[in-house]
Image (cartoon, rainbow, N blue to C red; front, side, top):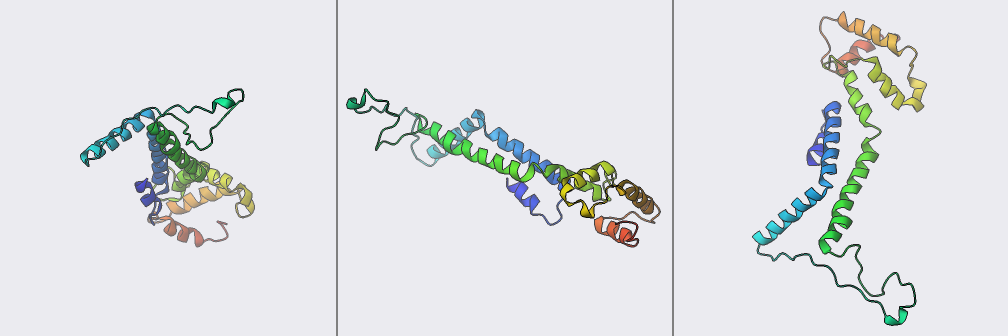
Length: 196
């Protein structure tokens, strides 16, 4: 999580690499939400406890709760004044109510923040002149325009393909290829009416 957080806060972020890192982090969280990962976590916690001189409590089932015998003829779903747990073992309770629950919430937040935007992040290489295979590809730019479909007032999709072809021709006539998006923008802004 920390490496993803650091990358997303980087001022010179590579969005394509960041989108891959987002997917890798999400996959790591999914692997953490497994019985194997839980067992490894418990073993490590036990090892640290022993190393620090603390005793390790073994799981044992909680005592069974018995209701008032005067209520035997009635349907009773809970007992007043008694602590109830969703499972019989304290470690199982921690696993379900804390460990898995926390990972589930993190995965839900990942989906909320990144699921709709991951394709757009991957398409940003279309504006990077150093990415020869994707630079100014119509299909990738179309993905971005579809993402902004409700804001079509400033996107002229009818002339987009011809503008891209013209921009590529203009760049090929330059003495050197632009190094970044800002140099590319400066070249296009020299003909403001052609590229709107």
